Length: 294
Image (tube, rainbow, N blue to C red; front, top):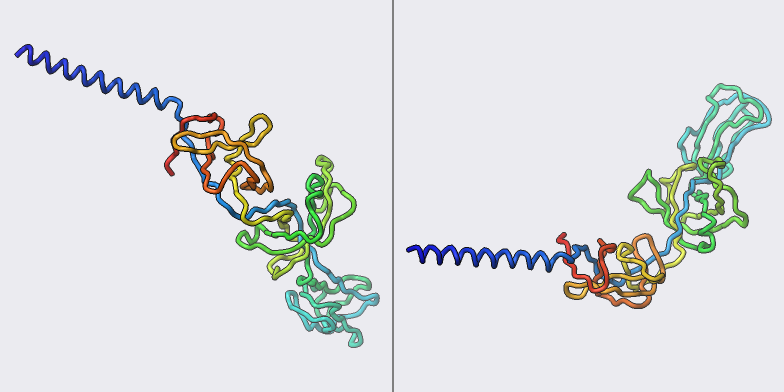
């Protein structure tokens, strides 16, 4: 019986040693394995964009009179749409206030029966349909922007809406950046003012509203898109870590157009290649990897 028991203990010991050896072997094999996230390189559209801040501006007509008088009656109230030539108000039974252009009655400064002060503003008309964006382009970006560039205008007030436009004017001289209409002395950065014309409906945007303008300076279809988070630099060259099996390989490639989220691969990569997009600092050529489960 003792020999049987000794044999059993010996078998258990052998099994334990084998399990321990396998565990140590697995740990040793996996000690240099880097866990990564990966993405596939696919063809698509890319846009190079210059971002600029701006405000909505429009033709504003402040109507007054050189002579005084009493407002007899109003034909309109604030918020009304008016056509050019429409009579807005009359005073002293002889004088009419006429709309100089199509627009919206933005402000009425006198009530019926009140006496008009000579030279004062009686009513303000805003032509929203002909509004535009006054934007400021950083001097470092101005070389990339040209007349006719398409623009995507957005506002924090309408986060789900994009308004189309184009650059119609760029100032020939730079000026100090303005914030809230004022120059900030402690931020003496230079900008080039520009005007952006709207190409479609933009009636939701009001005068003096702050907006963001993404100016599309370059655009291409059917290019290979490489995620920015996949790109590393080595010896002044751009590289990615391309997956093959359970290893990654340093791969140099040439960059074309750059966007916020991706770059164009001109050479060095192919559609369908899979590249690492995380833990790049832990990777090296031929490193063993494990893809993190999503």
